Image (cartoon, rainbow, N blue to C red; front, side, top):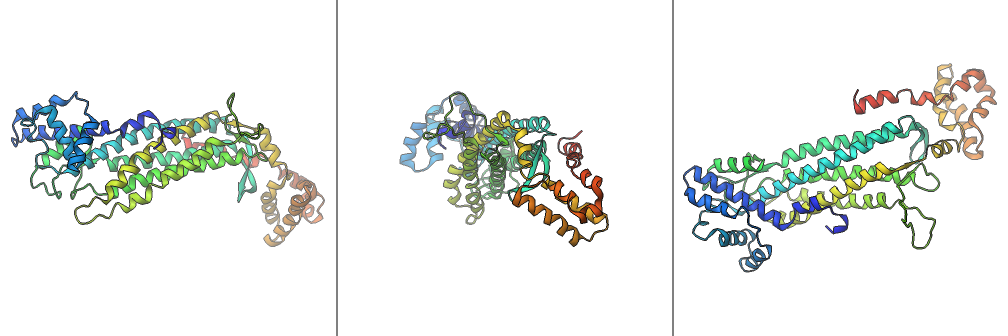
Length: 434
């Protein structure tokens, strides 16, 4: 991932130096367990820990790999350069490369998930704050992009909060599912290594032993992990699209913060474009792009092949780094977002009173008018509002059939805005508790 859309803490997880440090810890912990079992001398296991403070030379490992054409062997050769060839002769005893690669990948994904969960907490806090701030700020709801009935800006933020809260729960489950390790040997049978070694390594790394592996950890776990990231990305886009709509000139119910000195266009000085949320829409596409390859990685030949390997070298850092950046960007957008309550009311009144059409329809049916006749009575007046921008209430008051069914007071009573917001507190209690 390019630095423009990356944050240092997440990027560090995928740095080659971090990877080699995890590989080293896997091998060193495995040596400890082998020594406990009497498989290798304790002195050799202790000698491996001489490299605990070593900064592994990535360039040197790459140089060795250029000859060996095998990354794990290149690393083990470099490790022996620090530990001593005789002392390191029991390193990797009974293990296969995937024991190191897969266990390391899952450690990295768990660490990435922890950062993403913290990101989601930040976003949830921002959404909750704005939800309560605008709990009673009335705006028109829209379906198909068309005015529907009144809602509140607080409910808009609250539904995004609920969606992201579900996503956090999904990510917690995905983290748990990916937090497994495998030190089970060539085809996962433990023929050359005791299962106790796997249990020890996993315990030291904060993982759970994979119940059954082949030469690899099953890739359905990874598919579920990346699918979860894809769902979160889609939710980010869901919020971004709403903000982009609100910032349109003819809507302008909300907008991204526009900082001092910021420029919206190289050609038109008046422009204030929703560049951050447009960027989030694009970043969401990049994260979702990793989901299908992760799904396709599930089906490997027999006990393993490496068709998944090149894919994961790309999608693991790309998806986590991009999503980390996107979550933080969205949190910042929500925190600083400008809200325009008066514009919300002005937009609702562009077609005066029209948003109350359903309430009038229901009142007519309750007054004894058939639904078909009631619909026709309401619609003939509503269409005049659409076409001529007349006042819906005044049209109803001038309609003898409607007045006969509801009376003047009955019609006027149907235009109370509080009718549409009376259950906001109930919804908030469901979303936020209390």
